[in-house]
Image 1 (tube, rainbow over the protein chains, first blue to last red):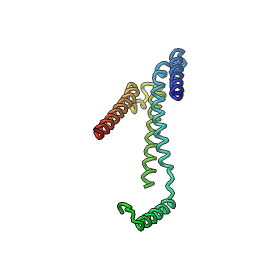
Image 2 (image 1 turned 90 degrees about the vertical axis):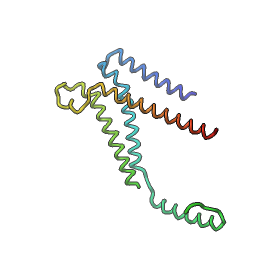
Image 3 (image 1 turned 60 degrees about the horizontal axis):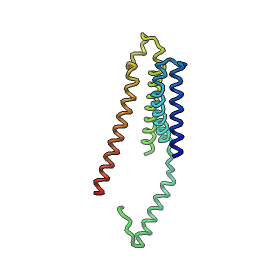
Image 4 (image 1 turned 30 degrees about the vertical axis):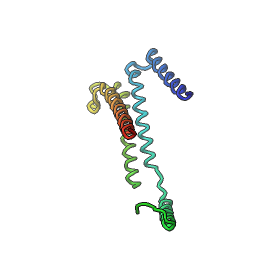
Length: 89
Length: 80
């Protein structure tokens, strides 16, 4: 319950800031109308950028992959010897 | 496999950066440029700068609700 109150408080603060920007005319009015939309679009593109960068830097550990395959073969042989059905091969 | 992953990651980053720079140019820099400058040819009229993100957001919300409704219906039919 407390977390959503924090999120709503943040939203109310942001809208108050935006409305005050509209009233005091620090920036030209046409800019202030487009500002929330611009922030939403830039947040979406930032998320997409983080996903792309994370995909590019994903580590694959090839030695661990080989060791894992060896472990799998050994486990399958052990279980088959004990009479357990180990599935498709 | 990792080459394909890195290619897709690079494509996503390039798309996001290009969307960001195009939209920044459109909304922030273009109103300051004289209306006879040649660069206005490359940008749609300013109303589209509002319509396209709003339309994309509405399409996204509709798609999400349709998907959630479909999954709920399928689970209910499987239980009954």
